[in-house]
Length: 96
Image (tube, rainbow, N blue to C red; front, side):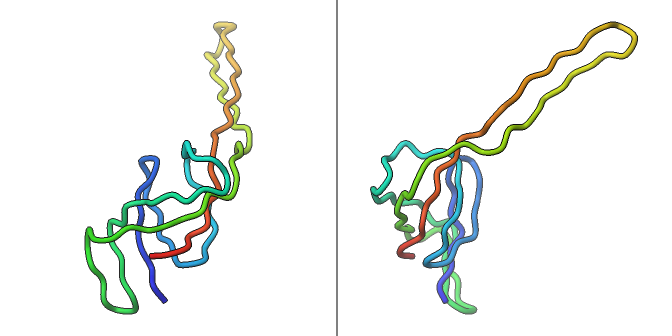
């Protein structure tokens, strides 16, 4: 089975062919193909560093669960509540 480590959105992901995963938002339309740079790719025990690309299909876009940011200073009547939802893109790895 071939595998690769890709970098997208400032994060690194270990992927295999046929895998579906959520990555930070990519500005491509659903159904389009996107090429990601492979930091490391290999099959079995052999691995090559910094060569190759990974082809993926964009399946959908969405937003994650809400994260609450709550700040408070005790005895000072200071409270702030803010919510945040991070955007993501769901991709399917097609070729390594």
